[in-house]
Image (cartoon, rainbow, N blue to C red):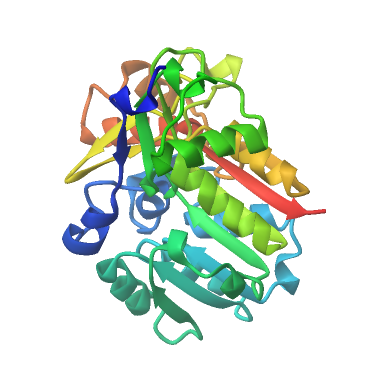
Length: 318
């Protein structure tokens, strides 16, 4: 009998890093943080000079009754910039910030000083599901890759004759069976077990509206922009090496299946859907040159690529 215990898989976790080591997000500049400073050169290429959170709030208004929402939970709130922007748009929101990082939770308190907000330091995967039922909206922005990921799984994972007491493998197999995930095409693959279990918890709690986003391993670029924007998606979660830890991109189609199984409708797309870029002749020259002519051009190229590498899901309970 083949044993799955022979697989040389690993569980990638960022928990120790975020709890004990993280003291800046400068090493992993998110799209939200990149757009937050009003003086950033990245705003020069936009059709409107504004921040990520404002763009996102305005976009969500197309799909969600944002003016009627009150209780919002943000899981992994970074520096608190997104929630501050939301509160700028809607001061009646009552946010609850949940974060595993003591450093980031303190930064959120500084950013949201003066607003009526609550804060909980905890691992969301250990959060009591009963505590989620009071919320109208859940937000997980650019942080799904921080959740645990099983890496280097192989085809033995699906062998029906295999048996294992390994709890990670058993949980992952149960998720494949429960949500009818398509089998990966590659012999070796990675699996976003933590991100899937986090969304499963949210959906099971019945929170009516959810916003998720992260670097996607299934991202695409519109045909008319493929000559100037280069995104190579492998279809399986890919390693993103950062200071002190690794994260993994997300297979968004799996998350959609989880949401649909719980009766949610979904809207999915790249950040470019709600962050409008003015594709001027100068910007096209910068993109074609791949930022070779200076640090600012290189930053702009990376930013525009990120607008297509990162995907979002807007979920609404039917």
